[in-house]
Image (cartoon, rainbow, N blue to C red; front, top):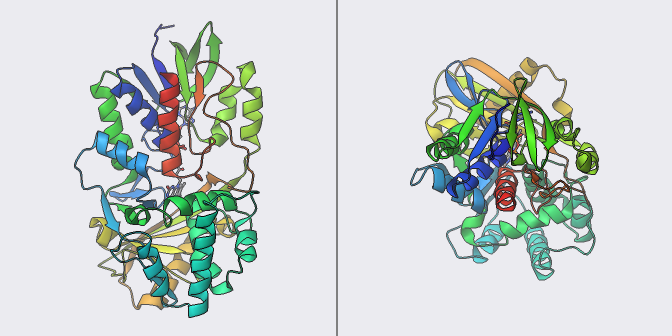
Length: 428
Ligand SMILES: Cc1cc2nc3c(=O)[nH]c(=O)nc-3n(C[C@H](O)[C@H](O)[C@H](O)COP(=O)(O)OP(=O)(O)OC[C@H]3O[C@@H](n4cnc5c(N)ncnc54)[C@H](O)[C@@H]3O)c2cc1C
């Protein structure tokens, strides 16, 4: 057994790498253990036919302040994103676009110039935003997004084209089941905040390169260690420290940040009696899938916008990777809260999406290859009054990080990063 007084960070996703960067920047010796060969977890690079894809298409927004701060810290002055002012377009059905006006005029203008909804619908949307602003986006009692929208008499067309798609994109949970309070937290920090907060940020590089890889370089440059391919098998207490078992060998650490996905946490808590209640809370979480469909065509496919919605297709959003990051002929399609697609043959799903794209935008070049990536437990199901475990646990020196820990946000990159930063603060 080797002895050490460093901090072990278990999991090299966005939460774990954020915690490691924060600790390393303050001179704390840190070791990151990551089970997979690549860093990034649920936001990671996947290489197919020499093309760098992601396991899932991700949208970030200007409100992701901690994520943007950390990216700037580990990769300063890099042109990381294609940044678009809020632009929600569902092909041939709906288009809402924010102009370069100061807040809240940008949202008011976007609503009143929106195409595909009538004047009464626009008034209803403005009334809803005003009502939420006057209660400071805080509900006396959580309920579902659908119930909140019904209470505020939101027309069907608004639910179909605006609130519903926003809810699924942000919470990965359909409005009928999603937490209205968490939805309002996101609205408060995006549409309800400064103009740049609602900007859409599309990464110009794969998601491992966006933060986890430069974060690992940053940690190593400050004397820390990042060990991919190292699965933590067990954690036990050892006096006021912890033994962490990797590849059958025990390594001792003074502190542990457990930053693995919620469905992988509980076996790691099993040997620490103080953590049994925490483990039960985590086991009670339910999950929502996301399917990503990658289509490589033999030539340019020009979509009207780098990101565009499709009505009447399983693919809710399409991404033109040539416009975003120069990957010629590569289209990504995302299907959030994709319960219906679980079990569908991947070839059939890909064929269906290709047919929908052709029907919407005209003939396509030859399809060279496709890849469907199904993440069955992409995020926790973000339902009303959900009990999420705190970063600080009842076991001194052992903290949790991850998109599922208690916080304002649904399971997102920003939630993961914030939890990692918080965990690092507590550890110090
Ligand atoms: C398809 C998809 C699309 C998404 N779209 C968006 C989006 O558009 N916008 C957005 O903000 N968010 C999106 N998300 C959510 C976002 O990706 C996650 O919230 C975030 O990546 C979670 O980070 P994390 O660090 O908490 O957990 P994870 O990314 O799950 O990281 C945990 C890490 O721990 C490792 N690990 C597990 N067990 C062990 C062990 N025993 N030992 C060592 N390592 C271990 C795992 O390999 C993993 O790398 C999406 C997620 C998916 C799956």
